[in-house]
Length: 301
Figure (cartoon, rainbow, N blue to C red):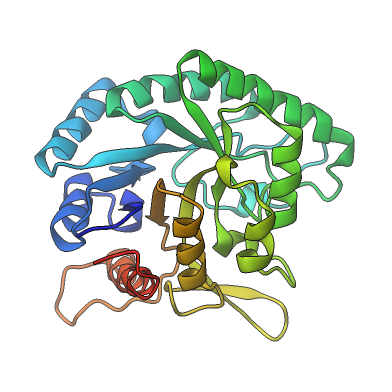
């Protein structure tokens, strides 16, 4: 399979069994890359030395490279601010850390990058506040501090626009990049997350305004917006995101980094009698849609 991007999938969108997830990614999806977030019912940042070594052996077995450490860094409440209504009800993918632990989480990510031979750490900018203005400057300072710490290890910090965090929409992502200008601080562009904001058109409207050299990672998912303004996840190609247009634009603009499937949708149905779980069945369906969009965009053969 030839693709101009590092086509990948987040491992726990398939299974918590890391060996099985890697087998599906390599043998069934034909991938050379995988994004790691959680395995064996642990967040990646909580793996012990033996588990890290086991995971490395599995990656070598399937000849898979790691796009990034999909850490939960800064997916916590901002200290001193009103308690976010988002925090307690969001799935943190087996991560349970508070603000005081964030520096240790970042240091752990440095070790994981070395162990898994990747140069990227995913982060967020804290659970979403109803009014972030009084805290925005301090939040940006914390992101700058983290980016500078990453730079000392020659690592890149990629912030995901996440609707439950303070940078969720495309315009918010653009503003953040304007404010935090460290060269190794980049955007994990997630059009699906951006689309959950009312009247948001991630591609082409938002994408065209994002500084292209600041996009360091991409998550692929899809969503449907309901008449009442609410949304629900969908397989790639089954929602409102113009992925074909996005992939054409990526090629035009020279983007050649990760396009990583973050399924989120759980509408896939395993075959009767199969031992396959719903996450895997859903991810298989969404990967099929992702590859179809890539093919239409002339980005896969």
